[in-house]
Image 1: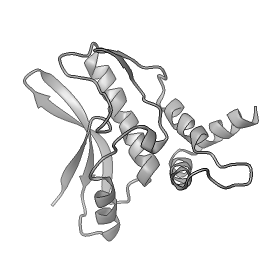
Image 2: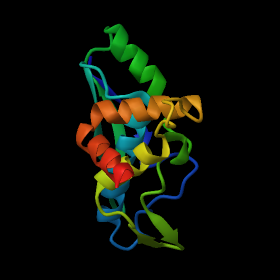
Image 3: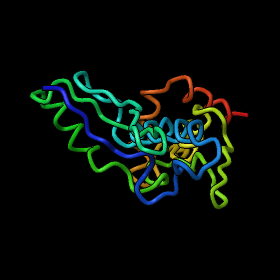
Image 4: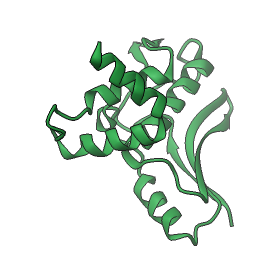
Length: 165
């Protein structure tokens, strides 16, 4: 039977848009949830066939907010079960996926410094890039860099181009 796991609207230990408080909440919340999906992919790779990451609307008395969910269609598949187990706790921080915060908060006011999600991916690729000898500064960098390169080849090429310039 299909079901979903709610991963939240942003990493657990990070500030995020607040329904009823953050100006332009719907836009900021949607941007943040999409960035969160990219960060989960950075740490865990693309979901295998039989599950998918998606933005999910949650209806509340004050309006609708979105969270990131893992939709599971085939829980009997060992790859799906392993992926679900890996992502079910969500992330604790943006930096755990080599991402800079996609939204900056000054009280309730939100600023989106990089308006394209591809810029967040390119930034994480640059942070996690290998040294000139091909080794990585820390083991998690290799995982993040490999996952993002596989999932977003255009962003990986853009990151290589920036390094060459």
